[in-house]
Image (cartoon, rainbow, N blue to C red):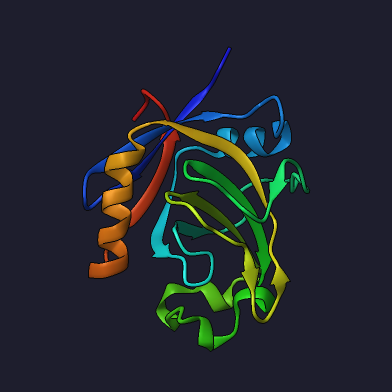
Length: 168
Protein backbone atom coordinates (compact mmCIF):
# COMPACT_ATOMS: atom_id res chain seq x y z
CA UNK A 1 0.00 0.00 0.00
CA UNK A 2 1.39 3.39 -0.98
CA UNK A 3 2.29 5.89 1.73
CA UNK A 4 2.09 9.65 1.29
CA UNK A 5 3.62 12.68 2.96
CA UNK A 6 2.75 16.35 2.81
CA UNK A 7 5.34 19.08 2.35
CA UNK A 8 4.15 22.47 3.56
CA UNK A 9 5.55 25.98 3.49
CA UNK A 10 3.99 26.98 6.79
CA UNK A 11 3.99 30.78 6.50
CA UNK A 12 2.83 30.81 2.89
CA UNK A 13 0.27 28.08 3.64
CA UNK A 14 1.14 26.09 0.52
CA UNK A 15 1.37 22.28 0.44
CA UNK A 16 1.97 19.42 -1.93
CA UNK A 17 1.63 15.66 -1.53
CA UNK A 18 4.36 13.12 -2.31
CA UNK A 19 4.25 9.34 -2.58
CA UNK A 20 7.04 7.53 -0.75
CA UNK A 21 9.17 5.34 -3.03
CA UNK A 22 9.30 2.36 -0.68
CA UNK A 23 10.15 0.01 -3.54
CA UNK A 24 13.44 1.73 -4.46
CA UNK A 25 14.41 3.59 -1.26
CA UNK A 26 13.00 1.51 1.62
CA UNK A 27 15.61 2.48 4.23
CA UNK A 28 15.30 6.19 3.53
CA UNK A 29 11.50 6.05 3.47
CA UNK A 30 11.46 4.21 6.82
CA UNK A 31 13.84 6.72 8.42
CA UNK A 32 11.73 9.69 7.33
CA UNK A 33 8.33 8.10 7.98
CA UNK A 34 9.29 7.01 11.50
CA UNK A 35 10.49 10.54 12.38
CA UNK A 36 7.48 12.50 11.10
CA UNK A 37 6.41 15.21 11.68
CA UNK A 38 9.54 17.26 10.95
CA UNK A 39 10.10 20.90 10.12
CA UNK A 40 12.88 23.42 9.78
CA UNK A 41 13.83 26.79 8.36
CA UNK A 42 13.52 26.63 4.58
CA UNK A 43 16.42 27.53 2.32
CA UNK A 44 16.53 27.91 -1.45
CA UNK A 45 19.32 26.13 -3.32
CA UNK A 46 22.23 28.21 -4.58
CA UNK A 47 24.01 25.60 -6.64
CA UNK A 48 21.38 22.97 -7.50
CA UNK A 49 18.99 25.58 -8.96
CA UNK A 50 15.31 24.71 -8.43
CA UNK A 51 15.45 23.37 -4.89
CA UNK A 52 14.11 24.21 -1.46
CA UNK A 53 15.27 22.35 1.61
CA UNK A 54 15.35 22.18 5.40
CA UNK A 55 18.43 21.28 7.44
CA UNK A 56 17.49 19.09 10.37
CA UNK A 57 19.31 17.44 13.25
CA UNK A 58 19.97 13.75 12.68
CA UNK A 59 16.66 12.03 13.44
CA UNK A 60 17.37 8.40 12.62
CA UNK A 61 19.47 6.00 14.69
CA UNK A 62 20.66 4.34 11.48
CA UNK A 63 21.68 6.32 8.40
CA UNK A 64 20.05 4.70 5.36
CA UNK A 65 23.19 4.97 3.25
CA UNK A 66 22.98 5.43 -0.49
CA UNK A 67 19.89 4.17 -2.27
CA UNK A 68 18.12 5.39 -5.40
CA UNK A 69 20.67 8.20 -5.71
CA UNK A 70 20.81 10.92 -8.31
CA UNK A 71 22.82 14.02 -9.15
CA UNK A 72 20.17 15.21 -11.64
CA UNK A 73 16.87 15.40 -9.74
CA UNK A 74 13.73 16.11 -11.72
CA UNK A 75 10.70 18.22 -10.80
CA UNK A 76 8.84 16.59 -7.92
CA UNK A 77 11.80 14.61 -6.54
CA UNK A 78 12.11 14.67 -2.75
CA UNK A 79 15.65 13.84 -1.62
CA UNK A 80 17.63 12.97 1.51
CA UNK A 81 21.19 14.17 2.03
CA UNK A 82 23.46 13.52 5.01
CA UNK A 83 26.10 16.18 5.74
CA UNK A 84 28.66 16.74 8.44
CA UNK A 85 29.80 20.14 9.69
CA UNK A 86 32.77 20.15 7.31
CA UNK A 87 30.38 19.89 4.35
CA UNK A 88 28.32 22.96 5.29
CA UNK A 89 30.48 24.80 7.83
CA UNK A 90 32.03 27.26 5.39
CA UNK A 91 30.65 30.76 6.16
CA UNK A 92 30.60 31.38 2.39
CA UNK A 93 27.50 29.18 2.14
CA UNK A 94 25.56 31.95 3.86
CA UNK A 95 24.07 30.11 6.83
CA UNK A 96 23.72 32.57 9.68
CA UNK A 97 25.37 31.66 12.96
CA UNK A 98 21.96 31.96 14.64
CA UNK A 99 20.62 29.11 12.47
CA UNK A 100 23.00 26.69 14.20
CA UNK A 101 23.92 24.98 10.92
CA UNK A 102 27.65 25.45 11.40
CA UNK A 103 27.49 24.19 15.00
CA UNK A 104 25.99 20.76 14.29
CA UNK A 105 28.27 17.78 13.81
CA UNK A 106 25.83 16.17 11.37
CA UNK A 107 22.76 17.33 9.47
CA UNK A 108 20.00 15.80 7.42
CA UNK A 109 18.89 17.84 4.43
CA UNK A 110 15.41 17.05 3.12
CA UNK A 111 14.92 18.74 -0.24
CA UNK A 112 12.18 19.28 -2.79
CA UNK A 113 13.12 19.90 -6.41
CA UNK A 114 10.43 21.91 -8.16
CA UNK A 115 11.82 22.65 -11.60
CA UNK A 116 14.05 21.27 -14.37
CA UNK A 117 17.79 21.38 -15.04
CA UNK A 118 19.07 20.64 -11.54
CA UNK A 119 22.63 19.47 -11.04
CA UNK A 120 23.94 18.39 -7.66
CA UNK A 121 27.51 19.62 -7.78
CA UNK A 122 29.20 21.89 -5.26
CA UNK A 123 32.37 23.80 -6.07
CA UNK A 124 33.95 22.86 -2.73
CA UNK A 125 32.69 19.30 -2.36
CA UNK A 126 32.18 18.01 -5.91
CA UNK A 127 29.25 15.73 -6.75
CA UNK A 128 26.58 15.54 -4.03
CA UNK A 129 24.29 12.57 -4.75
CA UNK A 130 20.97 12.48 -2.94
CA UNK A 131 18.58 9.64 -2.15
CA UNK A 132 15.32 10.15 -4.04
CA UNK A 133 12.76 8.79 -1.57
CA UNK A 134 9.50 10.40 -2.69
CA UNK A 135 7.86 11.98 -5.71
CA UNK A 136 5.26 14.75 -5.68
CA UNK A 137 1.91 13.54 -7.00
CA UNK A 138 -0.28 16.55 -6.25
CA UNK A 139 0.25 20.29 -5.89
CA UNK A 140 3.67 20.72 -7.49
CA UNK A 141 2.53 23.64 -9.66
CA UNK A 142 1.33 25.69 -6.68
CA UNK A 143 4.39 24.71 -4.63
CA UNK A 144 6.69 25.73 -7.50
CA UNK A 145 5.13 29.21 -7.50
CA UNK A 146 5.74 29.49 -3.76
CA UNK A 147 9.33 28.26 -4.24
CA UNK A 148 9.92 31.02 -6.78
CA UNK A 149 8.62 33.46 -4.17
CA UNK A 150 11.20 32.11 -1.72
CA UNK A 151 13.91 32.66 -4.36
CA UNK A 152 12.80 36.20 -5.24
CA UNK A 153 11.27 37.46 -1.98
CA UNK A 154 13.34 35.58 0.61
CA UNK A 155 13.13 32.62 2.93
CA UNK A 156 13.43 34.39 6.28
CA UNK A 157 10.67 33.25 8.64
CA UNK A 158 9.46 30.44 6.37
CA UNK A 159 9.50 26.81 7.45
CA UNK A 160 9.29 23.62 5.44
CA UNK A 161 7.24 20.98 7.26
CA UNK A 162 6.98 17.26 6.49
CA UNK A 163 4.09 15.18 7.83
CA UNK A 164 2.24 12.01 7.08
CA UNK A 165 -0.43 12.98 4.56
CA UNK A 166 -3.84 13.34 6.12
CA UNK A 167 -2.38 13.67 9.63
CA UNK A 168 -1.71 16.82 11.63
